[in-house]
Length: 432
Ligand SMILES: Cc1cc2nc3c(=O)[nH]c(=O)nc-3n(C[C@H](O)[C@H](O)[C@H](O)COP(=O)(O)OP(=O)(O)OC[C@H]3O[C@@H](n4cnc5c(N)ncnc54)[C@H](O)[C@@H]3O)c2cc1C
Image (cartoon, rainbow, N blue to C red; front, side, top):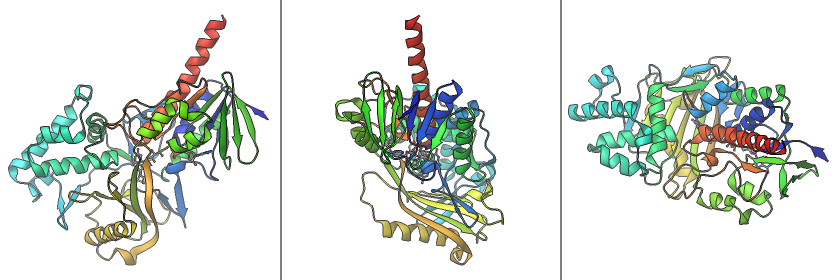
């Protein structure tokens, strides 16, 4: 039997962030990850020296995750994905420049002059927006009320899909999405050298340097809750006793492993969660047939193409890594074969002849991008503690409050760690 102050279940961004904060304060921490590799959805696959994230991954500079990583002393190499790039829009099977700066406003054929003026005004408005003043309305309600021109509205929703990775404007709350759009307009997005595996590696190294133990191949099957301690059991027979435990695994897994979870708030959080999925094709390519097309979003299709290598180093020998993703609508049926054909046909449109340049590729038909997001059906924000079970906490991208995606994962990991430290302080103060 092993003894620690805190056991963290799940070695993704949320779990590793929590570990780093706790270890920094001298807590004896163990991270238990069921897979043989750390990182969860932030892992990067090395295919013959070409580094492929699981779908296109960009870190919002000035977002919660970037700020918290900086606070932890973690600095990431890479480049700004949105700098000096024309955003193209795909509409009715053709490619257009989306007017976002002076030169593209002059050249774009996508909008009338009146609509170009309206889009420019909208961009300025979002950049100046006081986000806290946005009412609790859906993204669609906000967009429909604020943007009279239908084509400008379509472009706006495409940009919102891009920044939130979510294709559900009637469900998404406007405020967190607009916050994300504002951030991307102000500071941009970082593509990380070496892929998101670099973030995972740096978090692990730092947590271990502070004394945390990080173990893989540890599948937690049961958590038995007691008031003063928790008993954690793994499928290989390991048993761990801890006063505090953070579940940084997805909500369904959390429900399954925690005995008695159906009588706690975790049940509500699991029931209210609406997972967001996407279909992705990541390609290592010798050269891009049409170098003008570096970044494109679907206006009449929920799609996104990007050349991640334009800003990040993802191979040693000049192979570029590009990704194309389709955002699934959580309310629609999936058709994996049709999705793959759709992604390939958009590649044909943007980069005719791309197939003969391919070195490696990975097709991911249905990845969970986020296990929940701030939406109109959410009754209560999840975590950081499970109030009915002293000593049990949660973290993960489904435990975001106003954050989304990796920002939610990292911010909720920090929240859970700080809550444990706060409770410990209160106990110490009480004891005199
Ligand atoms: C295609 C795609 C594109 C994305 N793009 C972006 C982007 O551009 N920007 C952005 O901010 N975010 C993006 N994201 C989201 C981001 O990757 C995730 O929000 C983040 O990685 C989630 O971290 P997490 O720690 O919450 O969960 P996870 O990464 O899922 O980690 C949970 C961990 O728990 C482990 N686990 C589960 N059950 C057990 C158990 N019983 N015992 C032990 N361990 C267990 C799992 O193996 C896993 O490693 C994207 C995601 C995808 C899929």
